[in-house]
Length: 298
Image 1 (spheres, rainbow, N blue to C red):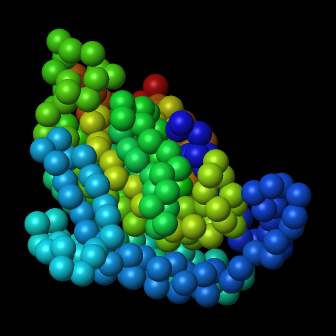
Image 2: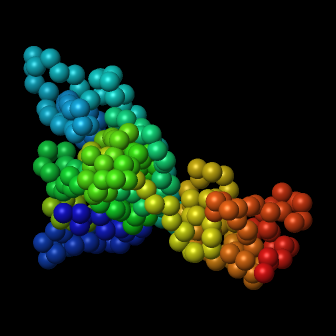
């Protein structure tokens, strides 16, 4: 259980060969664009030939449509409208630019807070292949860091919100939460494990996850006093793509965000509640910690 979520990103496609699941044979790495077309075709067919049942506790069952059974396909049903997020992957060196379509169902959004793509989530989940085989499940919630799991998770979980925790009950019991987010995602292999075989998941497998989001932990990767989710140009941007001083280190990992040789943590002050005071001593609409002309507080 829970061992499949070793961090994997599309950079692995730069390899020319990879081990098959028996770790003996070597197989060529497939073209990303061609494989995505196959994955999307498989997922589209799945959405048209299967139906979903959601019980009162937001547990999900998916089964094949049969003639005359009265059920409606996942795509056609309207209780949980099928949505998708476009996820771009670009690699100029290898002349790759792909817009992945990641379908998802929002069973309920959740009443709490949304994670960013680099925060930790407390979730229960079930993972299935398109052939209906279950490869992993955790009925009790566990913690995962979204920047250390498959890309599909880090893209879809931020679209949901946490529940409300009853502090008088055990946190590892799902009934301790109300109003939690719940959904289903359909992940192309390029945003999953692509050419790797991992714990019962064959290479090039699209993945289906049903999940519930109970709680989150905001993270500060570089311990500079600014949460990683806030180290962006605009709220909601991807923290793994913002480098304000152009030094090749994303702000979420950069202890000196403006490259002025003063640590970021010494260029910020905070309110009593811990929120940051975005001071601008030079009145140039650039907060001190991003302004190389500012001076440290201490």
